[in-house]
Length: 90
Image (cartoon, rainbow, N blue to C red; front, side, top):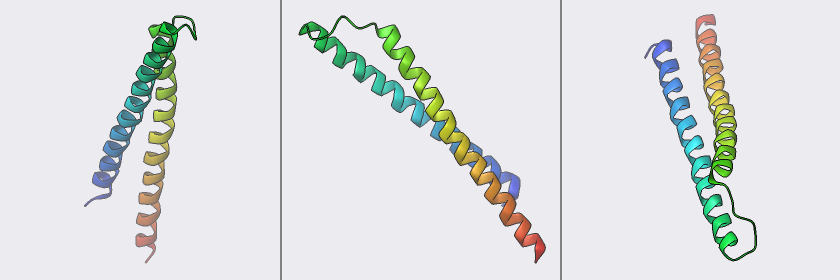
């Protein structure tokens, strides 16, 4: 495989990772809203706003997903470059 092909495959892994982490945070936000809604019906907390809870979940998901995917993709590209360089030095 060429270096470009491997780098492209790592980019695909980064995109899949981003989607997975973002989805995890959004699903946690949905569960958080349902938990708050149940507590609201019991009179423990005030009525939650789905828009606020989901906006917070999306914002945190975007940040976490971007950080993790960037770290994986950049780390893999640095590794590809270092391995290529060491093979060229032989």
